[in-house]
Length: 271
Image (cartoon, rainbow, N blue to C red; front, side, top):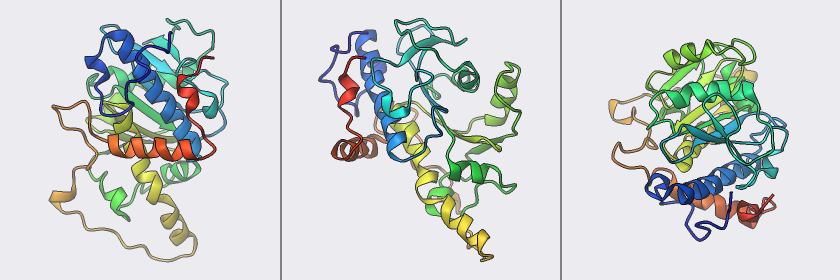
């Protein structure tokens, strides 16, 4: 794809679905590439595994996914692979994709298409540790309480090669914006890249380590009392808006990454 299209468009505060298809895809590619770089920046990677996917603007069910085999800091806007709902390459990229990884994502993208335009699935050590706990995510921090009543769980079924698992995934996900895949990893969704990334950041940034340290040392942990007013995640988007949720945080993170060693100039670079 010609990445000179809409090259001066901002990465936040913009509804990619309101743009002409080529422009919307170009902006979305830059947003998603930035998200991959930020995942690497935070150390959420497990080698080349895990996926962040986004539905391409337009009538056809096409999605962007990382080239299988590349590190997250090697992902650019131009080398993201465009695939269909079955994982077939429908774009110009010559890179392969991880079919097993997209089985999970395609299931989520198929349900509530307007809500789950972006799906982020990572294998972090802290996330996998919490996913292995019978109790799951405990309300031991403000970030954790934001997921009260909005977090789903799905039991581990091995590598995601069975298409029949899609139905079970969707049943367990329900109307929730986040899911813990038992003994596997974390998954969040959103209508935009910034919204899904903020949801992914919320539990990781402040939750798992205090709980793990307390349990390891035999110390008791204080659980937060959840009031009805605090049950809705603050990052859940308004039903009338496709912009705004997570935009400020995402823009701030991009600035931070640009100042450090994870230079994001590659967002506009060719392969």
